[in-house]
Image 1 (cartoon, rainbow, N blue to C red):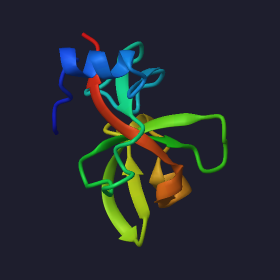
Image 2 (spheres, one colour):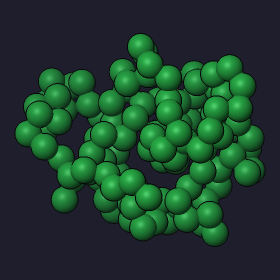
Image 3 (tube, rainbow, N blue to C red):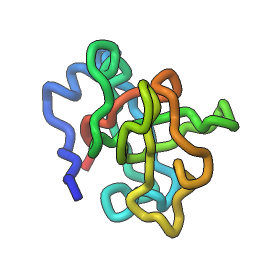
Image 4 (cartoon, rainbow, N blue to C red):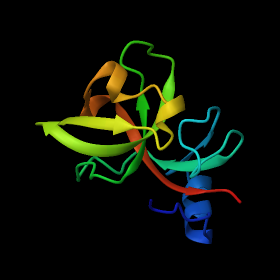
Length: 116
């Protein structure tokens, strides 16, 4: 399992310049990588010029609950611009096993780092 780097000065500056967004983790689906209360930075522009890759940790809009944002890991690309997303803790994750592949337009950004 890939580690998520702690925030660096460059990421902090990008956050100050509004090129990153901050989000607080609220569930157990990404344990042990992220625990409830952790805060992460998200690059909302990461997939404008590139596609999500397997292993990327992303923020996605829940396919059926538009006000709910989820943090999941990209598992695979199943069709053009559709991605299987899974939590690192399958016992406590609502993910593609429940709602299927997620279209690219529902992926809101890539998690770049976490606050320590």
